Length: 186
Image (tube, rainbow, N blue to C red; front, side, top):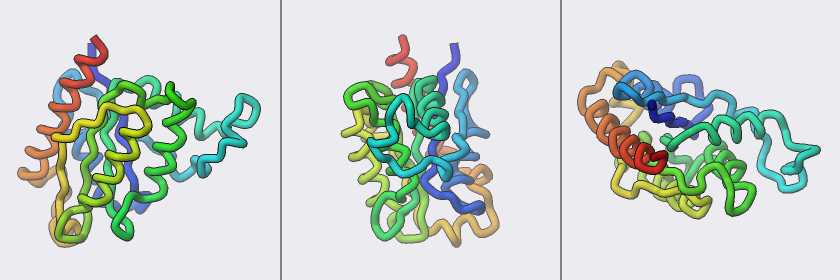
């Protein structure tokens, strides 16, 4: 039985270093672990309880929930926008937190990692992401962290998948997440 991890990236930019970090996770996933890099967060409307009904649920939100429902765990990639979580990632968390008490995150393990230009690698945004997803019902892996500073310089000529230090840190997070997801699924 393989473990299914859904990766959500909080940056929509085509050349996003967080997206590249997610691509590295997919590339370096251990045997028996399937990491799906979710495509389409840009198309999910802002959460609005008025459209979160059986009759009005947007197809893009339904597709996100379906993908999340099939996941054994989640790997969230958060850059830092003005010292906090990007709106697109917060919006995904909001959609997946519903219905209240039975959302897609409920009881499933989540790890949060990321990279940013600043000297702390987006740690504030990643902490805010952990907080939000924990309130949404996830089992947040507080010790599974990877914050990579100086992304613009560090990844100017090297893809994160080819950076040995990054791969080592990312692999450690994936292994922790996989162990927790496997235990939760058993």
